[in-house]
Amino acid sequence: MKRVANETEGGDSVDTETVLDALGDPDCRLLLDYLAEPMTAGELTEVCNTPQSTTYRKLRTLTDAGLVEELANLQRANGASRYAIAFERVAIEREGTSGLGIDIITRERSAKERLAAMWSQMREGT
Image 1 (cartoon, one colour):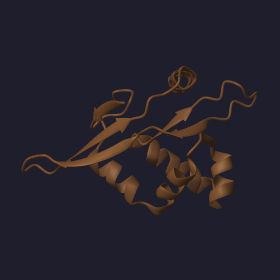
Image 2 (image 1 turned 30 degrees about the vertical axis):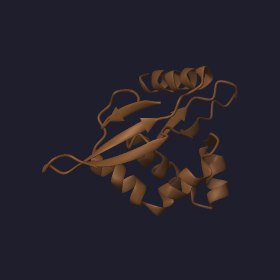
Image 3 (image 1 turned 45 degrees about the vertical axis):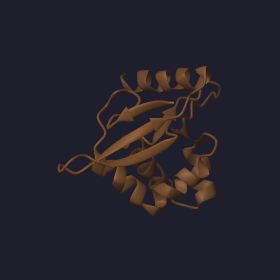
């Protein structure tokens, strides 16, 4: 496991309020409940019985918070991304008198998942 203090796996800064807002959102928590295994947005839309636009919006919220990662699907012709939980544990800590801090402890990823995440990042950059 890797400890990430106020940043995502890619090293991007994560705002404490962004993480707390995502965890406080019932739709985001529902998506997390179904992501025991990586799923596409279409699959999540179906099992959660939510509008597709809501599913994509909530997945973006969770991704921005560093709680979910988008994995490029290297095996499907249509290239539909799958989404996976990106953490083992989220710890909220008091930081002196300045407020709260978030530690996101990421889960160990397989080589296939690391490659898919890297490919997703490369697609975003183009």
